[in-house]
Amino acid sequence: MLLWRKLGMLFRPAGRLPWMHEFAQVPTTLLLPDRLRVYFSCRPQRAADGSCLSYSGFVDLDRNDPQTVLEVSPEPVLGLGGAGCFDQFGVMAGSVVAVGDEFWLYYCGWSRRVAVPYDWAIGLAVSRDGGRSFSRRGRGPIVGPALDEPYLQACPIVRRLGEDDWHMWYLSGTTWLQVAEHAESVYVIMHASSSDGVHWTRDAQPVIPARVDFECQTSASTFAWQGRQRMLFSYRHGLDFRNSERGYRIGHAVSDDLLHWQRNDDAAGIAPSAAGWDSQMICYPHVFDLDGRTLMLYCGNEFGRDGFGWAELFA
Image 1 (cartoon, rainbow, N blue to C red):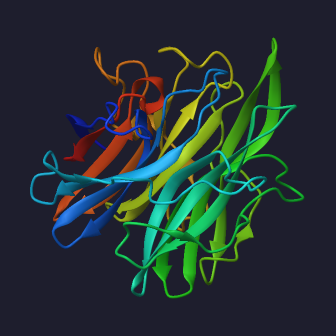
Image 2: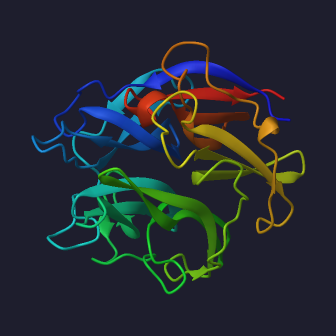
């Protein structure tokens, strides 16, 4: 069983910039020589009609004291896509991977639809300035709707284990549920592999079995611990989930080959707090090593509206 010691809130957007008014969702790290860079997704204030946009930025934290903020990105690391593109209304960072002297950003692009409120697909952008800004590899997605995956693809978590051994865990939509006058999406974690990080072979099969009704799963953070591969991920009920009883929790699974996973949520070692910023939900875990410490970034209430916090693995 994993045991995490919560260390509190680490970063709040708190209206720092017009495009960074609130939310710091799906934090993911890039370890630099003198700092820890955390990419996250944020939003400006909603429009009068209630619609929203999503941008991705970063916060640089002191490598020796992550509670010390060194810099906050003055502008989004990647602009929104053009009219009609899959990422016209949102760019949501998922993973940043070092490839030679470049950094590759895998991200979720948002578009809007009529019959359902949104669509998501996965894009790729490249940085040649140390991860401060990115340019699209192309205007289209690298993972989008397919014959056996007709709906949403988002939240790409990518690991490169060798020169030509790439793995991606991402959410893929399975259906839409009609609730009163709006639709709610249902999605599960799936796996893809690649030899170059651009072209992906998809399994089109859920990785983790569901345990609650119309379960939604996302943000699969995989890491090695005690001789096995571990996965922490977010899951919630598919309906009536904006509350403390049915909102996001962090699940846990183990594997010996990164392909077949055994779910055991009781071993996750972390749950909502009794009070405070992560008392109603916990979500979007990201596990990483920092100078001999195994740390986790995660979001709390209202899907990370206030920011993200951190915890340390101690057993």
